[in-house]
Amino acid sequence: MSFMTDRRRIEVMRLLDKLATYCYLSGNILFPVTILRRLKYTIRYGICDSSAIDFAGLGMILSGKLFNFQAGSTYAKYALLLLDKLNSKLIHSRTLMVAYGFVLPWTQPTQSVLKHLLVAYETGM
Image (cartoon, rainbow, N blue to C red; front, top):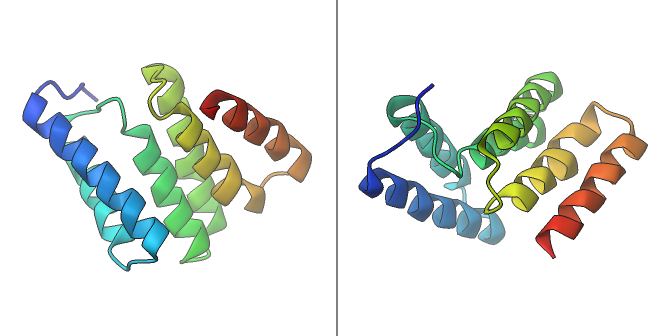
């Protein structure tokens, strides 16, 4: 997959990222829509520095709302791989938190998840 280069599309992705955060925090039903829209942009126009959080968000939707824990785990692991490739400090902590806090505890032992949550906390602080 190629990288997103158009500045307007990157700014749209950042705006949708903020919108997704606010929708999640307020319990708005548009949270899945914003995540899916960002994934559509990523697939159509390429990867940007905040694309990894969207795959983790899709894993959260699959695990938390649809109870498909294996599929959610797959997308969370893909988000972690993408995070390593992007090496983006901007979303590192958030991606780890979503993947290891909301998705992977359903399929992995608690001790292995807690180590990564500590890393997410330390990175974010």
